[in-house]
Image: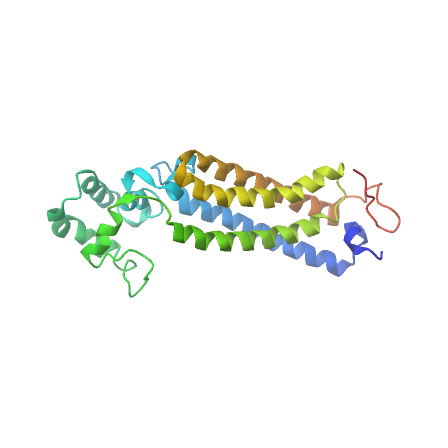
Amino acid sequence: MSNLNNVHFKFLPMSMRVLFSAVLLVFGLGYCMAMFQVWENHAGKDGDPMLSGKDLMIAYGGNPEGTKLETALRGSMADMLPAEKRQTILDWLHTGTKVEEIAGKIDPILQEHCAACHNPEVNPHLPNFTSPDGLKSVTAKDEGMTIHTLIRVSHIHLFSITFIFFITGFIYSHALVRPTWVKCVVIAIPFLTLITDVASWYLTKVWSGFAWMVILSGALMGISFTIMWFTSMWQMWLGKLPADVGEDGQIPCIR
């Protein structure tokens, strides 16, 4: 019992198992919320409500066929306007964004439905729809996330996800999994795919096909998390003590 790092769950103190379980429950809920956030932020950018590779291509690399405003109206902002008013703006975008039509056709819609949030006094990070210059900024070609935004999101993502999977992997290390290399692969995959995931955000700007690497990385990360979560919870509370575990609770080091 002296080496707790290599002790099976069943031989850990009750307080430690409760701590591990509480952490896994919160992480599990947080992971589900993260999946919903990805869906909310990216699904529908291509006009289809389902999340697709093209949605991620537009999110990171931009939309060569449209503007930032159109991307928003087909995605995250789709429900902020009545369908007929949303279509009025889309038609205006597709017919050349004529300046003479802004005052009579477009600005009234923006002031009624958008300016309450798109106001520098309320949210300085959103485009300003209280002035014509703000509208110009979102009717330009959609080039996706800026490098500045990607760098800001990247460092948060790298630190926070590493922290989560370090703790989850540490808990999972108390499980008995055979062969041992499978256990090691499951622990290592999230860290490797985290690197490929973040790298693909930038590479998608060079070649849109890297958006599929974002999807693949996220899928592998999710599979590893699921395996570690359910294996840990099962062996901690529900499963029988594996026969390979010694009388002192030590997990034998077998390849």
